[in-house]
Image 1 (tube, rainbow, N blue to C red):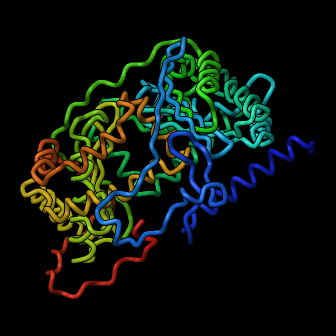
Image 2: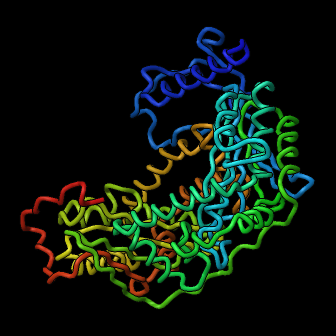
Image 3: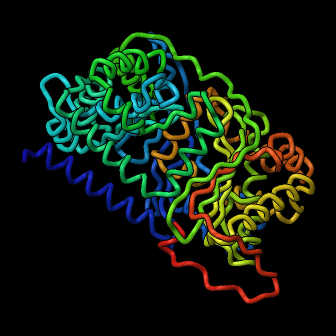
Length: 501
């Protein structure tokens, strides 16, 4: 190992130690970077700016401070959108490319987007997958990728010094812009995915989720299973992957997010380099708006002691003006963990489940609103009726003032975590760019949340949800049903944790 590589390794180890320390509760205030300039401050160099400890009571209702983000944005000559935040506190940078290349673009070939993304780092000119991995490792860099319904991503984390940054970016540009899709690697990944599909047949939650999207979206692209089917995976060819890459991984279809120890000119050079390395082409259109299905019920017979219940209806797209109100309403109903309406009634009062959760998943077009719960198979119908009742009451009455205030305070307290690290910020930038949100979206969101009142939340939830409009999928055994025990009765012991997952 030469001296340059030794120094790079030492820096990576030091950064790992810093990350480990940062993940632990701090016993005293830690040095911080000045938000405007990125200048490092320490107790030794500037005692006047040393943070002071405060009693929690003295904070009152004021939200915790959050990193101020100066988001710069532009477009490359090839049409890629770029968002950049300069952050000088660590000698590294995070890069994320986001493409409209998720399974909603699969067309008649389910699994095409997932397979194309998974094959990016399997081979390029002169390098196989082992050599690619060794190249990133030798530079102290990390490559990541993933494909979902709306999008596909490729990411890089690297030291910012030119001797590590430039070769890491060159390799990354080659991997994302010019993959070769070698047949041997493709066959291996196909076999892995086919094995995964076999294992998923033993997972009642996955079976239910797959059927739920089919029932909810019908012929819409969102109904397509992201991981493909046994038939479609076997039929895929490397020529199809190469054609999909040329179309969906084009510069015009890309959002480039950059955060870290870079100047504006360095960020512009990186964005230009990556944009030029991608195939030429325009942005792909978003999927069409889905049509809301009629309420229906489907059941999948599965041998188990529990029944997995999934309830869903169409929600909103990511840019909808009701986003903040629905987010807060869902946090109160079932998205906030312990203390939510659904958790209190089903777990705390009745012992019917270890957990029940609800969520809006806004996407390019209307994503699902979903409620998920596992409960005793013999009480599944009564549990379903109770969930419907609680949703109906919430849509009619809305949250209480105390529930709303608690949700607003929880969001104000947790929101700083959304920009706590460069990795968090680059993920936010990718979403802002991909969904076409304003660059001050994070600040607007918190202002909207804090301005909400009970009636605004209730009205927004009632506009988008109806108690009688749910698509319901149950997975479990068919058993004679029992009524719920009265609230005054002693609660039974809950099921074993392994059965509740």
